[in-house]
Amino acid sequence: MRRIWLPCLLALSGIAGGAWAMKEKPEAETTLRDRLPEDEVVYFVLPDRFANGDRSNDRGGLDGGPLDHGYDPTHKGFYHGGDLAGLTAKLDYIEGMGVTAIWFAPIFENKPVQGAAGQESAGYHGYWVTDFTSIDPHFGTNEEFKSFVDAAHARGIKVYMDIITNHTADVIRYEEGNATGYGYRSKGDFPYSRRLGLDGEPINEGFLGDEIRTEENFAKLTNPGYAYTPLVPEAERDVKVPAWLNDPIYYHNRGDTTFRGENSRFGDFVGLDDLYTENPRVLDGMIEIYGNWIRDAGIDGFRIDTARHVNPEFWQTFVPAMLEIAEEEGIPNFHIFGEVYRDGPDNGYIAQYTRRDKLPTVLDFAFQAAMVEVVGRKKGTVVLAELFDGDVLYEGGEETAISTPTFLGNHDVGRFATFVRDANPEISQEELLQRVKLAHAVMMTVRGSPTIYSGSEQGFVGDGNDQAAREDMFPSLTDSYNDNDLIGTDATTADANFDAAHPLYRLIAELAVVRQANPALRRGLQTMRAYRDEPGVLAITRLDPDSGQHVLLAFNTSTDPITENIPIDYKSRSLNSLAGPCPETVSAPGSVTIELAPLSYAVCELKGQSGSEASR
Image (tube, rainbow, N blue to C red; front, side):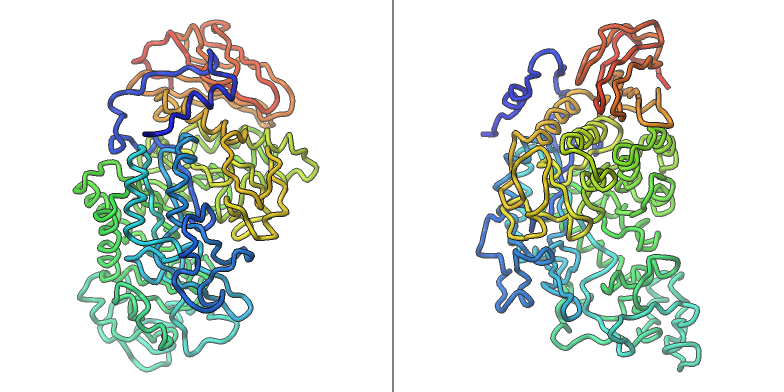
């Protein structure tokens, strides 16, 4: 029997009365498969850092020391022991937060350890895949994964897999390399038609280059030694699965990327073997691999790693193939979103990948950057207004933006609380908590599918990005994590952090209930109502075209109380508080006066307008 958590949360919060309006859950939204991507509240986890449910798999069945099996819970760059058993055992905790979809870092079998001598780290994060068909033994088995998916589905929780098509683990070496790495060798200086440069011997006769993406053309690419001479260590000659991945001909072999220009798509990502995704065999192979995961496990979506480093034509075929397979398997709302990293609050860059590459949507790095600017660095709320103005740039425009996964921090860029603290070195713990709470309130109510990075709901404040932002939820043995000063709690990461009474956990859970009960907060189109060039008011209305529900969102990003007259539609006459302080009536047709304390918010349902009238 599923645990009933909502009454307990409302009682704890002291708002079980009129402050939060509940609505009947629409019958059409009662099944997991019927829900649209924008309906979800997503929880992102690194399984290795979440919960250790089976200590027998900590070393992944491998012998030797940490440099062999990768397990060292005292080192932030090695396996710590979290697994599928632990994740499954904590589904009550996850469900209690109002989460409706779990996305976790890749769990395919990885190369346990890689890196130069003295700089080794482990594949605990999942991005160094060797076997794309198997769960990494550090996490469990394929059967355990299927059981996890079934257990999540039984609770109405979807499961998103993190997938990789850009690269595999670092196995291929180059004979011409040196200890400092392999510099990128361009297509102009090292064409496919010559061995090791313009003056080299002719090779690959008849091959017309990577822009002719046909089987006939690529059958003439027989020698991968155009830029470097690939060298596969004997011990790793057959380490990759499926077996075709062991052939160097299916990799670009041009050296390391600098993430700019040509080499962004053709270079090795920090030494990882860069797949030749222009080759039809690679495309077909990836469709087969990930189509089988949909068929065998019944998952609900993919987050695509390093999507911008793969040629657009790959996605133009891969995505429709995945959606077709999902449809055949009875998964009509299969969600696919690409990782397109961009530093800054301009969504024009990431939106191009929905137009040219035809990705259904992308992870909203622009929203994350805008929130750091507005809430963390105290920039004007105009930053968010301009971000939302850019939603028209997505393929499908604002309707597509509604389904973008929004987030405040993650395992790569770092934690939101860390950004706020670093921007305000003298900030008190109380103000830091209040700013983080405000940011979550924005994310949970504006357009997009809100995505919480595990630990954020427990007040984690990291030391930086990447490994420094990948703390354990279970008791940690890592010193650089355990000296962190968390917010909203007296605990440290040396303790288990699954506290359902933590103020951030409670806030997320409460707003998840309101979001689920009010379709305008999930599917409503946005209209900007008020913003400033300095900290202060941000006001938005959202109108759900199907139900006609109309909601006003108002936020105060300043440390002073504000009273604002907000323009609204002229048919609204009264307001119903869904969260925060809302007046009962409008000040006059077309205007409502909102009073907000410092760093606070209000979510108000507007009543009295015609449901068929657009407010835009």
